[in-house]
Image 1 (cartoon, rainbow, N blue to C red):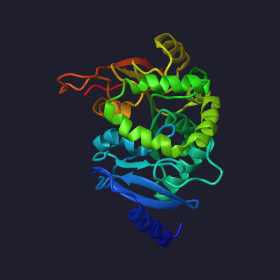
Image 2 (image 1 turned 90 degrees about the horizontal axis):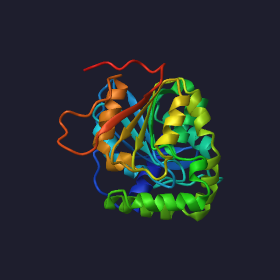
Image 3 (image 1 turned 45 degrees about the vertical axis):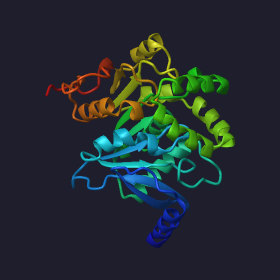
Image 4 (image 1 turned 90 degrees about the vertical axis):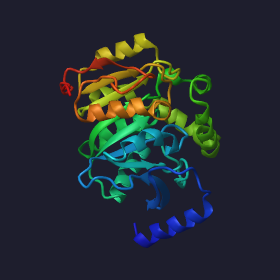
Length: 302
């Protein structure tokens, strides 16, 4: 990518894009494989900070991931891109499926000069991360899978729509101000194509094959996820590096609704600390460890 091309795209986008609510992260533009890509980045990351990239869900931009990303931005060199075809980024001419989006995420890291990162995903972002880990195992340090979506439980599309509608009643009202414009921009044709790709992706197989430390975070009020019995059944099949945790009271968009609890979990996971509630909390969500793979690093006490 030529630097002049990226700079030109930056200036053009700044002129045509309305101002949004201020974020602690810096708005930036680049061009990846000929597509304008919008992203957000830590303003002043520590010199030797580990890199962390947040990967958004189906039809969404990275905007709803900001509450969690901002809480971690002082400790990790943080990136929150809108993948091609989503949010404020340009569209890829052929559209992208799950493997394509994983490749786009890798190309974005190439563009930013990042060799290895921890990836934090929500919903569809989790299959993208699983594919990334399968295709580029040397480029991912750890994986955080929040409300992993896709598979039989979300089929057919009519069922997924009902699940999303139910979830909407369980999310903070301000979430609609982010989700509705993002879904409208993504459009019906893109929704139909990507939905098929998402629900046919072998997420469970990829999860069972993981060979890196992985944190799975679920909300106990998430209508897009199977019930506790199925979660325990799947957990019983996982004997690798996976740690699974539930946040009580959370629905699907945990990165937005329960940012403080999620950021707390991620910090402890990154440092191999035991999963405990933040002792400074005066109320709110409670975190509960529900599974620890036999090959997961033993948790250290503080």
